[in-house]
Image (cartoon, rainbow, N blue to C red; front, side, top):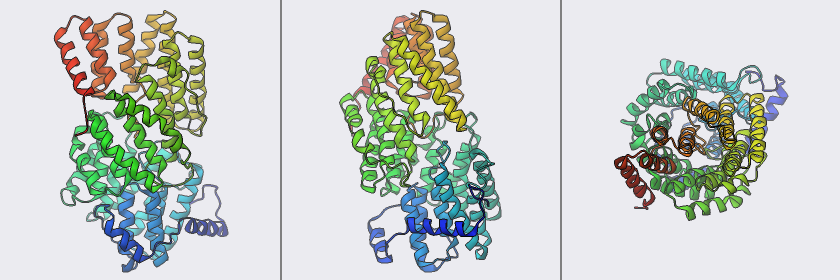
Length: 535
């Protein structure tokens, strides 16, 4: 392996590894671990190693935390293993994989995180020379995520990790943990543009087969949800979504993760319920990125049910969470970028989902290290300004989107470059409509819709601020083309079921088209949606 900074100087490696060990050292004694384990519920995991038998319970706990993406806690657990057995190479493997953080995040990892992960992977490799062939397979695989980052982009390294884990599964067919981690790597490596969902279906089949034999394993329920976290497959995750929070209720992310499926199928009250529990647990753990991430999902759900006072309370609580968000600490599943994303998304959602165009136009942009998060505010400002006829302000907002997109190109953030490009095109469409050029406006809005359909949303967000096809339907309605508008709302609902404005738009479009029966059906769906309450 080569260093991020292309250095091979032994003393620098030793210093870095020593600092890493000190950074993550925990004072937790074996007795404290046993006391915590008596009240903790993380599911059931056993990961065989050649480490000292005495560390097995602590190691298994670390892997259980890792399977629920509780990365800070898993690092602490593996560090505790090293305190008791300094020769345990697999503890360094666990730290390295934890330092990769959420594998579902499509954003590039920071150099600091990559260096810390590389340090751990290198230490694992050094100690692993005396380990088993199986353990060396795990260690070699995790090294692919951190090695030669100066010459291999992130996607190349993710694909290399998946291939290495596939090789391990082939050589160790009885190792269910290898199969589970490989299935997760398949989902992480899936191209966003692949609408056959080949990787996701393959991963889901593997996980479901193992889950039938290990029903209390946290990673299986968790990764099944991730495997099917796309509109076409979401219903397949229903059982996992219902059970995961009960398998590992001590993990804040396990409490949040079911809402991915609930969001995909439009079960808004259930999303609120599980995210509320997740936020409480995350705040107790000090995982404020996770709390913000769950808050964004909860905000989205409240807004679909038109529980606007509750949505306002979530928005108004952001300053307190923002003050506690660390951009450098490794804690829960949500990376710091997810917290920054939520801080931008929630106010934008609150304005746009209420159609308060003047509020959207007046949103105050943040400048962060994550241009795709900053773009949310500028996109909302562009839509708001266009709707109130302030095309000058709207063009300024679009110019800012252009700058942010160019920054993402420079950062080689391909996925987010495309997402911001879609926002830019949609914003230009509404400016064009405000300039009374409907044909050009519709052409732009259709382009944005086609491009959005060709991608998938990232796990960082419950959904777009305003789906492109819904915006296209809105535009067609404004142009008194209700039959065409109804078709676009229906397409939106295929991807975003039970979404308030798509249902409302479909009702109006059906009514204006003279289709009273269809309008009545959508009216009934809206009534059911807005009267959802906690059971």
